[in-house]
Amino acid sequence: MKEVRNTAREKMKGYCRVCPVCDGRACVGEVPGMGGLGTAASFKNNIEALRKVRLNMRLLHDVKEPDTTVSVLGLDLDMPLLAAPIGGVEFNMGGKITEEEYVDAVLGGCVDKGLIGCGGDGVPPFIHESVNEAIASLGGKGIPFIKPWEGEEMWEKLEKAKNAGCSIVGMDVDAAGLVTLRKMGRPVSPKTPDELREIVAKMHEWGLKFVLKGIMTPDEASLASEIGVDGIVVSNHGGRVLDHTPGTAEVLPAIADAVAGKMSILADGGVRDGVDVFKMVALGADAVMIGRPFSVAAVGGLREGVAAYIDQIKGQLVQAMVLTGSGTIKAIGRDRLYNIGA
Image 1 (tube, rainbow, N blue to C red):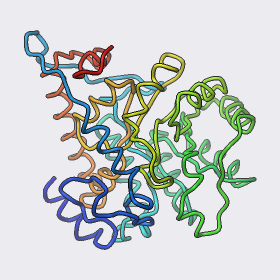
Image 2 (image 1 turned 90 degrees about the vertical axis):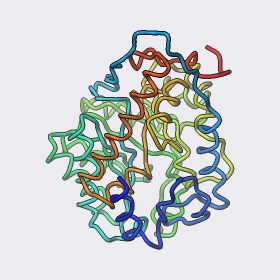
Image 3 (image 1 turned 180 degrees about the vertical axis):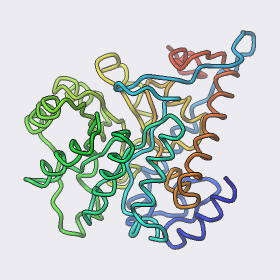
Image 4 (image 1 turned 60 degrees about the vertical axis):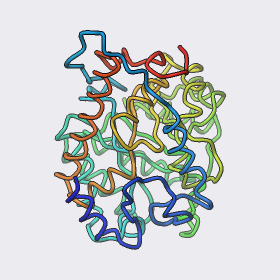
């Protein structure tokens, strides 16, 4: 990974510094780019919230080779991890590789390791077109995320995603305030419960599951459950749309308490290694998404770089499971965390 990161640092110069610790401090306000909006408080809060979570080390047990596999949203995964939907290589990452190469690296690298990657959406159209083409070439193994467009554009993109052969479609409703789209004059907006019910009904009619990304409060999680979505992603869009939100790890437990068992709960925001994956699962996530580090791995090493990063994450997760006595992912609960409680 050192070579991958060094290559990424050179290729992403001016867009991402590939810092030793990706914490939002060196890229404040760099949107477009890989930074956080405004003061980057939301980005930094994601990191800080996870940093404060500590593990209970336990070694008097028989866990030696933990089982990391999970089934989430009908997907059998080698571990509770997905690559988050990020697009726009040219204006966010420097453009030293093509959008097609980037999408193949992320989605293909995930499939190579028994995981699923998510694809982004945006302007220009080749962003989502590259995602759909990659998913089709991978036999439907990928989750396209459509932005909360207004009018016919949303429905057209949802139908194109369905035609790619995927089993799950997502909407990152937290993109409603994206600076990059606003600058391009493309209308995106929050969605009303009635609008979402219509979307969910159509997705289910098409035989697809629907995931809503951008849930940060228990009441909206409960509302999403009532609307009938199949899963949510607890996310503040990596701190790129609204300054001064709490970190996702801060809000995740209350959201999990509100809707656990009613639908799948995913979470992202500040996750950097396998221990962070463990923490998010312990706090209530069924699976975890990682964004920026996957981008660095893809730009720095293409498909092989993504596979190397996934191997690193799994090794760290396995170590955390062994050293906390967690034989399976289901065994990872709040009792594995220090001073959190059940």
